[in-house]
Image (tube, rainbow, N blue to C red; front, side):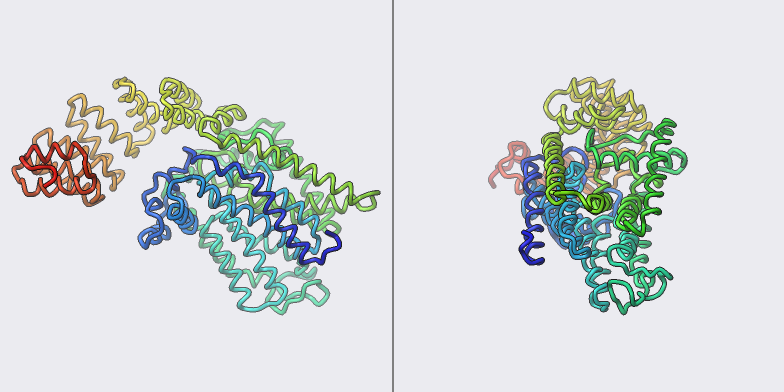
Length: 612
């Protein structure tokens, strides 16, 4: 390859990196959806399940569903549904394709900026196959990682072109790609700061005598554009706007943990330790889990001391060798800075850390490692062969660990069982494992795991709710009612718990209490179709047929194609003696579900043939 011209060599390496990513992650195309946010993003999301449509596009740009504003991510899921339906293979292949493309483009970007093909190739290949990428690629709900990563790299590529020749069109491409990236994943807010790091190295655009003005004549890259800070003002404005949107969405959706619930000292020490753990897992990827519970306590003093020592050492090394080894400072600052939005100082969600958060930040560590090893090995005998063997062994080992890690994503039971094995106090994994077992008919086993989750975190709402559902399935009504009430004690706005509790109370004949629960479910979830139907049925049992019809009509407005709603309306109008209205709704139900025996029975009950 060394005999090839630069451009063909770069193209061959770029293709090789992409193929490496595809080969290592190929098994993911046979994996299912997982019962952890995939339902929120795809399998139980009505807006996404309709595929691409005008209403869907409008929803994507206006919703804060899943406590985020990322319309491009929603659109990508809609496109997948349009193309593949609910076959998870197609959804997985889209994520894999995006990751392979990101890996290839990362190599091209690093190579173009530095002119060093092989350090660039190692950094890109390590990024492509590292086990901590599994969560971003194998988890369909994390499409925003690989999609946001694409626009991150495209923004940087457009920026490099702009620095080579400052022009308005090239600058607008930078702004456009950055804006699209923010609409895929808000974590990209740190990108303007990363561009400043590139200005220092490898672009050498920051003059020693100040960064507010244009580049001096002795830098390696010439530009007639404005100063490196001034030119980024529009990007910083987009960052500010995205921060406001994200904060509002997280607050509105309930994902933002109130400041008083986790003391700042706990969050700060957890952030410090998390930085060290992320570095450790990058160097030695073991005990990776889909969910790491937040410790909610100050870590042991020896843990804080170790993390502090690592941070001090990295800072001293960056300062001491910043001029001689500029990539060291750039790589460490890249890693540290791009993690800030998700490091937990502002706590969003209940996790202490997450592998997926390192998708972009890890690039900084790979840059520091690749160029650092290259320079430290200068003067070695047989240097090229030694480095080739070393880099090859590293990539092979990382690939092998990734192949193993991917097997845990082959089923929900494997995923959450592994998380329980490699973490402690993982209440969420216990509850999710319970759900997975319940879908297999292993209800008693599922209940055992729900109780374990509650023992770890007594206020964990999902475990109480799941426990109630499965207790009701087993006919243990008293216990189920108690669990639903416990769910509502910790989350009074849990609409499904209100509705399900109403069902159990109605079965016992306590219609007044059931009606109160149904109304509360509707109050907290205005579009709750099932609760409207249940409320209408309960009122009908009390002889309040006008009220009953009113709520059935509300359900019909929510979904004019719901068969059960039309059947309920048909029965209600029949009782009222309005056979024309009853016939209309029975016929609508028959049109929506031809040949249904329940509909045939209703038609025959009012003296009409089913095929008339």
